[in-house]
Image 1 (spheres, rainbow, N blue to C red):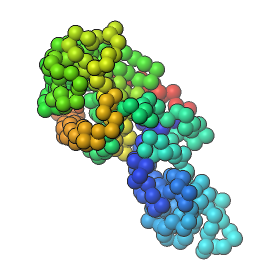
Image 2: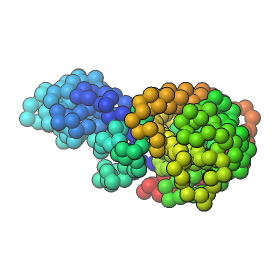
Image 3: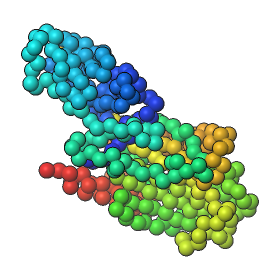
Image 4: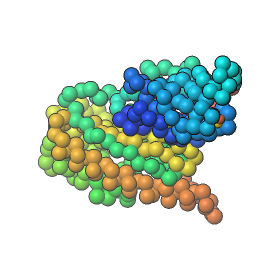
Length: 340
Ligand code: FES
Ligand SMILES: [Fe+2]
């Protein structure tokens, strides 16, 4: 069961061209392509005659021709030609079409009722066009695990102390108290850690020397978008009520999880920072570091998926799981509310 009346990231816009591309999203086989004018199309990847994947056929202009007997579909999924019986297009020769939109360099797909799809509801990225902010190109990984294991991970600031020792770890990331907040779009787990060295990943990036006050803001939004904000400021200047000063460093990591099926997830991310907007060396260094760290998560989460699938004794929860459990509960309610 997935939340459906929402936008998921199908992939990077640049990877969708004027050719057929097969992909599975929420367990559904979908064929993507672009029309001559660049508009994206997503259709059910199964011909209604004998269910040959349309992705095994051919693009003819903006239409898809089935590779078995030539049934031809336009970008709305309607059959417009049945060459084996000209002039007699079967009424039921229709494939489902999915609303798709390009935004933020990503291709978004609406998996629910097409008439409810509103591009205004695509997840908002606040500083995407802000020239004062720097950005990484981002990356993507295939995760051989259920998407909710990554959602849990992105509500769990403590795991960095063991999984990301050379990047995001630091004193206090193991045991400082966590705050939990329910929002109208999901859940936030956060905490301030005071007067400690800057973590290895951020040490070359912040604009001050000496110890820091540091905030870990881990937020999950429906259906499966993680907003991970790292705030660093000189020790003594941080805290929930302290305003951001000139030396406050902010990095926001956007994490998009799209279920391929129950056991596989497409994971895509990019980062925005409030410094060095034009410094490509910093962007590349951050991108490489993020890829390394997310590969560390991948190894753990794929093993967790297998461990939980094949467990031979009960598992238990810890206090750190409160945010993850609340998000799963809230997401379940969203899914229930979509049922007829
Ligand atoms: S399977 Fe597509 S036309 Fe026969
Ligand atoms: Fe992680």
